[in-house]
Length: 408
Image 1 (spheres, rainbow, N blue to C red):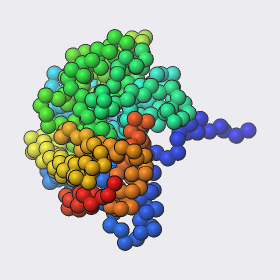
Image 2 (image 1 turned 45 degrees about the vertical axis):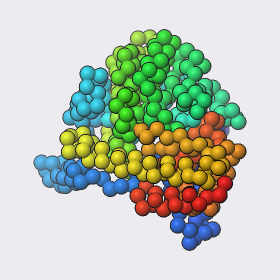
Image 3 (image 1 turned 60 degrees about the vertical axis):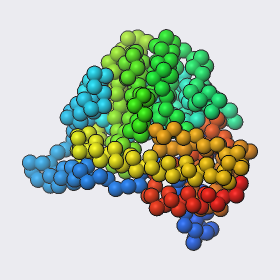
Image 4 (image 1 turned 135 degrees about the vertical axis):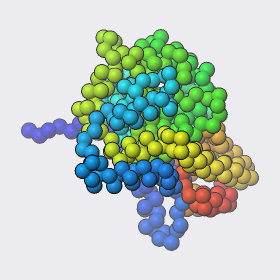
């Protein structure tokens, strides 16, 4: 007898998207060692931590070398001061400190969320969407094998130019977990208050729970757009929000995030979801780094907020430069369409007549620029590329020059 493999892994399609992108880049570089490749692909921040935040972490790390400053395990749910600060600064009158749970990042929280709900749950997801929503569901058994139409058991909600990147909610089965991201990764689309009101009302009426990924909220510059789902009446009854310091403060490698689980969200038997989420966080997690949490606190004070806004503005300017390049005459002649809101770090670009991986390879070969194939985000992403604004300014400018010469 031998232990059987988790069928979830067997059901996964080949290769998680981002490692596959990295693999193709490495293979191309090996064949073309002199090529100066620029990445506009993965959403990895590139600029240094800001001075105020870096100092806060450095000071905390240094204090660990003293008897007075040393700290061991903290609360698994997070530093009480940081939990309170997040509630105060980001969710005033919308969430309480004990409803905020600190973690090592949004992606990790999404994986733990799937552990929370298990395999006997319906999954509905925006299409295209961040791959971990679906791939994680497959691993835990809440979704089945893959096909050309996607994974069995997943309700895909096409978000296309035709429907202004907001799905037809009527397709969502009752009692579903709904994964929803705004600003969306990869399309960059931001849901309006009216759209989120429809989503919240639908969820409450049909017994659904929304997993609202707001990891890019800091990029929203339009004051009319909601930055958290809890701006919407009724959301506290049906929504869990996942968020992160990764894009807000450049913590992609530092690893710090949080979730908000209101006491009002309940399972069918009346048990508060927060009760079981607390158990997940205290049993399957051992707390975020104390040093990272010191940085998180600094990011939310007045000086930190000023610095993080400037950091995000830097990436938004990169996106503006890329939009100008991708709407150049060579792209217009080929019928290329660029979708960009000005409230996201990502540009969603349609290349009519191309398969996503084919245009990825062409741009890598002819421009030495790495992008992300849209098909990796779901069936509706075919023929699209995602361009990321995370990069050094000089690299973005050089990439724009190369792209302006691309012949399609």
